[in-house]
Image 1: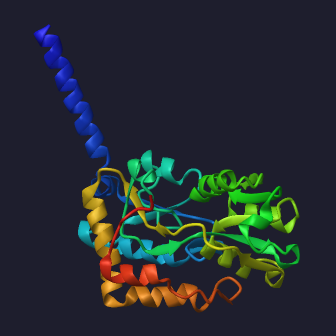
Image 2 (image 1 turned 180 degrees about the vertical axis):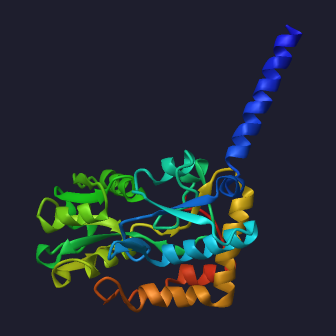
Image 3 (image 1 turned 60 degrees about the vertical axis):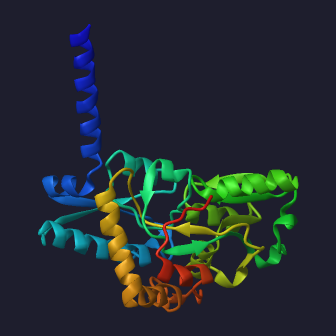
Length: 294
């Protein structure tokens, strides 16, 4: 029995050690000779496709992180692989090792913090509504008994369901597989509004077929931070990513990136979101907080 107990103990130790090693992203990147970075396809202006290539402020931040990894590992020619992700699969793909980092429009909250680790918050947003101007939807109360769209795998789904229940609105919530799909539900008349983060709605309107027909409306239901995701229990990778983002904030480079993507013409159509920096983000340029939403 003692030998069996010792064997079990050793097996558990080896298993735990292997698990811990699996979470050492930098070591894995060094050993295999490449890094896999995630990108979204329609999360304007964070991470989206323009002329078939990933662009956005999240992509720019990711590239800065990759440059730092190349320098730290002394691998200037490190191969960079791109992996498209959705709201639904981004966390599972990070956890199973398919991707090494994701910087997009991912909300940093306590529930997700049990599965992944978030870097310093680099944006703040809240759930509002996209609707056709002709629909006269001006508030969430105007949605009583109506059909509203949101995107599968987003925190907005839970926020909308809770609000629907609390206010007894009787809304019918349907889901798009991505943000473009959810927008199409409104454009086609299957839903009267699309509930999502206000900045993503601004990006979708700017790139839509008829932007003059759409508007963002309704008061924000809550404030949530966006942050880059790395694997759980990987302090070395978090330290590197945090360091890159904090350096961008301290140097003023982050503010330049913000103006580039939120207050200047962006690809593919040269639309300008004209989206000023929130007070929460202005404060975090100095605080460098990674505090999650509740």
